[in-house]
Image (cartoon, rainbow, N blue to C red):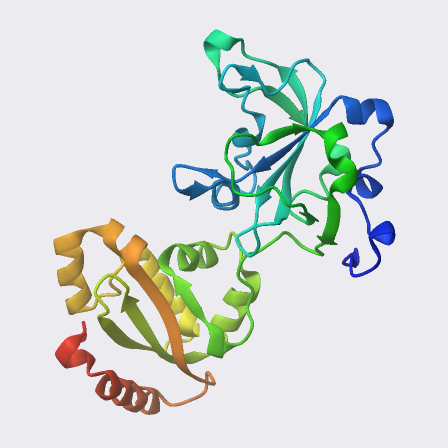
Length: 295
């Protein structure tokens, strides 16, 4: 396992990007660095993170032109593409390391052809750098020789970066899209293991209007099994949520619903106790009167 690199030391001892990449002077002169933020309200981090892990979307870092200006000028140029992390404006995650194989002309602006560089594949999704770019979108592909000495390595993760890590049942609070990614088995292995090991009471929140739904999970695969019902059907068979689905459609759930654990129980607890506690929480939050509970 690769250890996390520490950077809390004097500036002259901080690990720099090229201490990891080991590019020669000639290679640096032929290398571009992409610092990708987002487009039209969506972050490029999500473009990468929510894509198929076996075929990641990194086209944004190989865009051929910035206006009329070429981002890449010759076949064989190297590009190291980073996306800004949601946790910090100055932290960037490596999502691609490639060599340019084709460049569209100015009349056909698009994505440059490229081959991924296998020697850096172990760093993709794991290498995080620290660099202050600011919030301007006017430029995002830079010549490495102008900046590589100023880019510090923040850390190298032992596993592929996950924006949300399981930190205890008391902190489980997932938007619908994150819940879907977790259940689909693409990411969040620690979440799946934890939620399949307990039964419990949960709260679904409609963030658009503040209404709540209180539910319980008493099946053999615990919370994970019950939340999979919501991922699949959006309603889990609940009458109040079915009415909402008929009225507003699936997109409403995907954009506005969050799922929070209120109380957990070991898997050998009797269902009657779970139902008693479920009714308790319905009374606490008055969800029969003001929320989506109908029983």
